[in-house]
Image (cartoon, rainbow, N blue to C red; front, side, top):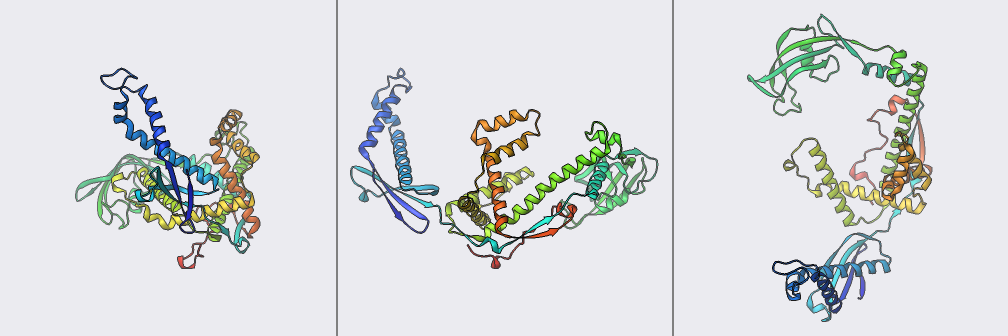
Length: 450
């Protein structure tokens, strides 16, 4: 076998492969002989089927398999011997007969190579690092939330008011006809939580157990239920019961209900503070990671392999389809062509290239002790933590996610050491706001090109 490598452009390469027909035929004969010993065919005993029939039945498929195996072996050998970093799978095509030697089978394999990747000046970027600690107010606010979550409701013989739980039956009609989603039986509603439309809660306000009411309700134009959006429905409602809220006191019984065996309220506060500090640490880590990843996507300079983009496009389309199916949409109603995700896929590939280059150039790969620490952290949530750790280390593939996380953390730490850091004093409540981000959205025309 001979292989020559042709450069098509900065990323595409083509390898010309020639395979000996004689070697192919010898391997075909060997495989058919082996097959003949076990082949079963009507009218013949196992292993007694004539070779002519074996050849007629299986020869074409066996020859195809041999050729594919030979091409793969020779192609992989050429890639390895030439130190090629290939991206994606090769496109293999037979050469025309007039370009082939009569004693050989000739093919060409076209593929992409991993691009040269350059990272720009990271020190020119500014990252915002919140400066925040868990204080007594954070602890008390969390305790108040925990108390409210354990609110009970005591039946009362009075009109419903804000904060009460109202259990009711209701049915809604459009032009006298009930509509989907407009019925409820023994349905609990907390007045003031705003989980129902304001007109619905207003109608319940002041009603007592046993009372009924009919009232109109105008659905907003942007209501999620298209059948009723912008329309006026008529509701019949019956109140089954009204309950006044009773928030548990912060005492020993409450502490015990949250796992503090001796009922110490001080121990409960300490446990709450410890949990808040863990949540805060994870939140701060994620805020910094988001900024670092956004920065890495801006500093990379590299040609983007088509194979990587197309694979990412397919992956994004598949993830979107699966998410919509989980939300209840029929697969027949979902149509997301991969091409719709091209821009996002290009950004994702840029980031992948940048992260890989930063990790390679700065030796940021996960260390064994880092992986072990992450596994141990997860294992502590199980009763037999040592057994969990042993299970993870039995097979290398079980550690893949931990290695990726450790590498990612190394990258974030390295990037922070290189970039300019602006510290920003903040409260924990502000930091934990899900809407908080320090990643600035830029208009397409202002984005630096790759």
